[in-house]
Image (cartoon, rainbow, N blue to C red; front, side):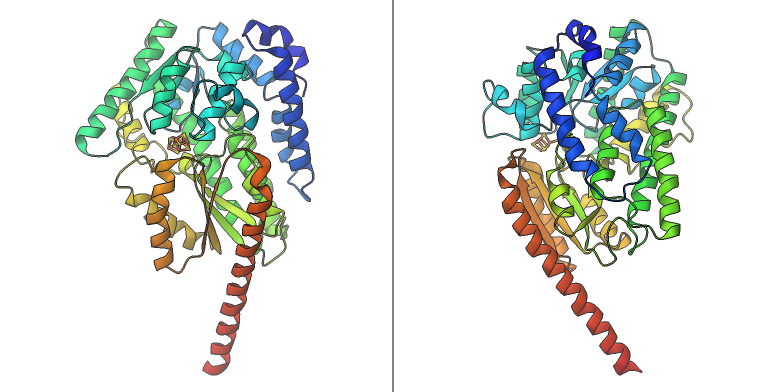
Length: 446
Ligand code: BJ8
């Protein structure tokens, strides 16, 4: 990974350059092993491969060019952050590193062992100073979605500025009023950093840019699962494309995702699939997958299954809704429109959260899924507890579900593989039994 040429910049940002270079080289080697070994990848993945090689290099240089022009750079850990406001102001809004096991021992010097690995990993990156995105951010925008996160912000704030947004845990009118004020306060906080007001035109522009990005991702989501016999891109590649969306420049990224989609359309027309016909099609539900957490996708897709959708924040939950700009004529309208869109996010931090269950059932049917994997990061209580209600609804509909709880360590790979293997076998058996039943009823009916 060519981060060497950015040594001076990284050093000015306070990055521990030697440790960072060592980690990034390892991460890039892991990426090449994981991704380049997949057969028949779309040509348009070349851009995303290039992005990985520059993830802590050129992109960091771009963000710091933006900062030089007195534009904001905001780091986030949640899809509740209204990135439209930052992008509208000409700034960069990006997800921070939080998917690696390598930073967790450092984090555990300040945080308890028994909390979610995403939070520990992110905190560890700050303590090690090995995430150039964190080091480049004016502030980290935290939220009160889960207990572990909201308490971690107080400790993280000792090392880097953190601004916390209160996300209510219900969606009554009084809760939404609080949320609206929080969006305003986010805008004001950025204004206090750049020393000027963010205009309505800028917010509108930001909304348009991010709506286009979400539209491109909706298109990718549709093409991955459109044809039951042709899967034009692996789940792992599609996941990586979505992960890049949290770091890349949104306009360039949208263009690249659309180019990939053009190629996927062609592949579907020509019948080019990366998996053989009849491969069990899976949807993954649950917690986010931060780079380089590709463990589940790797296991599933090297065991004979294909993932065609992630009902996750690094997935469908992130891009499913656009901001409606109709009748939006001033900043207040724009904030209402943002609130309207963001309050549709169905994170398990809400109670009740029935819309998530209804959506899962709908997606299962629409995408012609064979089975679902309910995936939670260890110690994520909201998603773990909510799994009871989701599984109950799936069971009622006769939808097969495998629940997997995991962290970032490689130790449970063998065990997950064994469970996935058994699950895939049961799906294949179920499919064959259904085909047999359908044939038999055709014969009897004729
Ligand atoms: S909108 S899922 S990105 S909060 S950190 S809740 S995994 S214990 S990330 Fe999330 Fe926003 Fe919701 Fe999505 Fe659990 Fe870990 Fe908490 Fe987590």
